Image: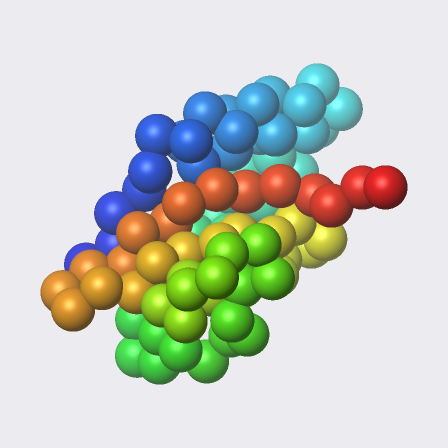
Length: 89
């Protein structure tokens, strides 16, 4: 099984990283490394996180990381990381 990143995730992650880096490049890099580790930990048990609140599809799950929601799609041979966002009212 492999991990693939959707273009939407990549764009938003770059924006989040840049925002964090304005305050501290070290914190931004730590955030990136820790998030990558969390995403890679999905592989052994892809359904371990809750069904997404944002999609009506059992195969889409929500990884919650440091206040961010990262929905991902579980397919037969890969996991597609779809998006990253912080829910706000």
